[in-house]
Image (cartoon, rainbow, N blue to C red; front, top):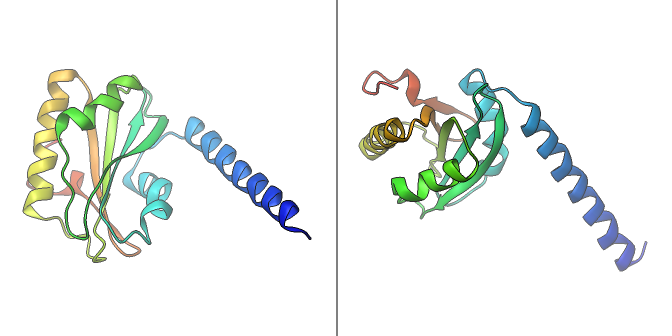
Length: 153
């Protein structure tokens, strides 16, 4: 097979993957944190920097889409509520699931993770955009902050 055919084949495969992912997202209702984790884990599992992702949901908790909101360093990401909620408003999301990875592999929430989650929950209440959960992704595992005793969603 020649170089041109190889490139064409690779492009067709990538297009198929993207199309199936869009179809999966458009028809998926997220009812628990495991489903949200499965949706985004592949994007985050080998990342060496912190990624902050938002999964936007409609009124029936069906996925509209998900986006990377911020890319950080090896150990931190800065997220401002203005940048976080802008895509939620643009996509007309009724609710959002937050997710970010810990490149260290340990999904234990930091004090900063808890404080940011509380801040985004409060900002979301003012705009009537519910924060459903905040997942912290580690190496083949995750923590749902919804189940954390220090946060009330």
